[in-house]
Image 1 (cartoon, one colour):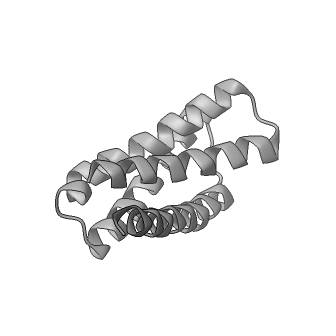
Image 2 (cartoon, rainbow, N blue to C red):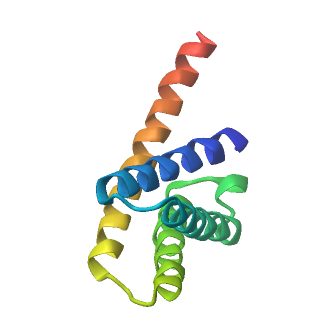
Length: 113
């Protein structure tokens, strides 16, 4: 399950990098956003035991609660909640995580053959 956590972290890192590059944000904003998103994700993953037991509902719960928590912590830090950012974060993080997990399966299948 350590590999799954690494792939998920990489997917979330890509999400933050794309956001920072798209919006011309600072290195400070990059660090803040990455810590909020990763912190929310992995805190939720601990609560839902995503990397202990796995499963679709655990992944869905981790995604919804973890990304939402990360966005809310970020909002508290920056001083406002951008609901559109919340929606974009939910949409693109699930996309990136699912793509990363698919890539992991494809690479894993090739390595074991």
